Length: 237
Image (cartoon, rainbow, N blue to C red; front, side, top):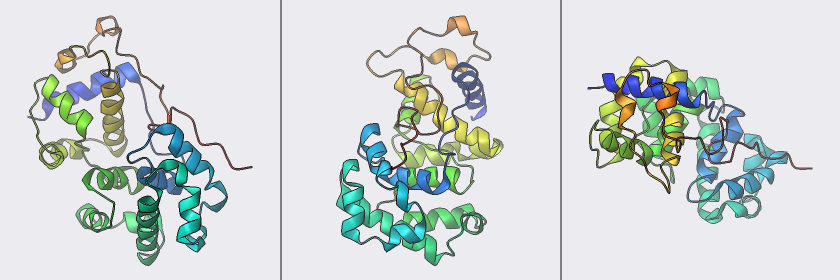
């Protein structure tokens, strides 16, 4: 059942190229995975700009909740996100404060710990698992579920249903491939916005470049910051 997804992945990778999501700055990227919820690229970039001089776990936790909230205000829902970030950072510090050591924990255990934190749902937990802690996982987000239905690879009503069905496929990939698969599915999905087109050809092996629809052009270009328009947040001066 998962074999066609390898063909889909190879076609997407050949057409859009490497995406390199969430691999620029481990802590900064991790924070953005929370800040990006329910907001847009510009707002996240503004919030991250306000954090450039405190980008360490100790410095962030040394801020009062009010100070942190004011800095991330541009990201919207800043009071909730302040609580979520502080909870995440507190858990990180209590767990040893070391990305490598925490990454050594079994994926199932680490996923359960992330899901126990306020504000961390399954999709965010899986993104963190894969990009922050180096665990292969399948992100069954809305882009993935819509793609699967469009190209006839299954109708999944929930995130959990698709994640569970495709996790065995993710395990066959390298970590970099698993990361790229999620990024490529989302970037491809964005090309369907406003002018949807038939992309059932994705299940055909080695689709030639001249057979791709003209609409299938990546919006932002390959980058390391999803939803930030390919721009690294400017450093605070």
